[in-house]
Length: 376
Image 1 (cartoon, rainbow, N blue to C red):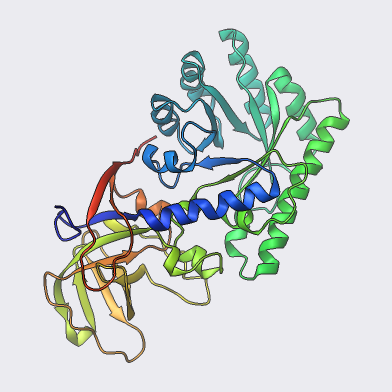
Image 2 (image 1 turned 60 degrees about the vertical axis):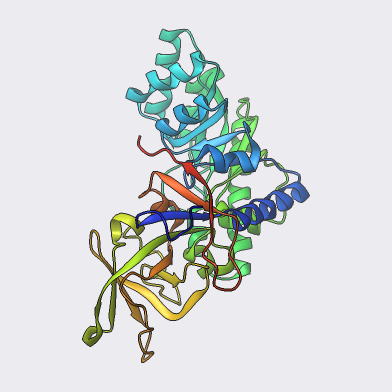
């Protein structure tokens, strides 16, 4: 029998009970709103996790390597939600020729013209969504930008619709702010769809999504799909904006205590940034969680202990304020709850799966090992 005491540390752990609870929570919410989910697999990058959401259902990917991996597993409706570059179009075409419906994303006339030219030369149709900027977070164009219609016209029959991502919702710290971010995301993308339709162009797909707005939206009238991915695991950033609690976090990293520096108030582990990432996403929040909170192997948080430092293969644990260091001898195994589930999961090539947080002092049993797929 394999338990969390068995594999070499550090390694990633998924709590399947929490995972399934998180999945059901969003499924129920979107069912009530009458809008389907397009799972974003960039967080889990795991066919096993995706299968618990909707095996073979529509997915969003952040790399073409993900698209190819999930296509191998029988997923056929795949949105590549990173701005397309011409040199990647041959891989998109290869997906199309094997029966996948790959949709790409763009926000410029140059991209649209390159896509149309390539599709014409290859004798194929590659559907494209135009990215709409709803909050200035990253890419996209405003729905009032004249380039929107020009891009739509350049795409011709490749125009599939519009997409928005409310990235600034990750910095919305109240329920009202989250609801406003969700309304703005919806309203902005609907305005873009109206502008295209007013110019006589089709806009069948109206895609929105982020984990915060997917959970905060109260009215998605006019929207055809919602994208979300982080929610399957959640993380401390999501807990920090009030979207979940630490009891919902399904991903953690098991590390081992390898040293002590009591004069510095340090406990040293073998889990540095190569295992947990350098993401400091909670630093801007009201409560800075360092590089992550610390739990025992059963999943119970150790009061006031958190990860405050990370070199490549060393993690430093410290207590807050004047709290004394807990007695954690060399060889003690701990679980680090991450700031950013996507970044932490990306450090690993597999998940050790447990059925849930145990009661008493029993060490959780590893029920399965699920591979994940990294790379571009």
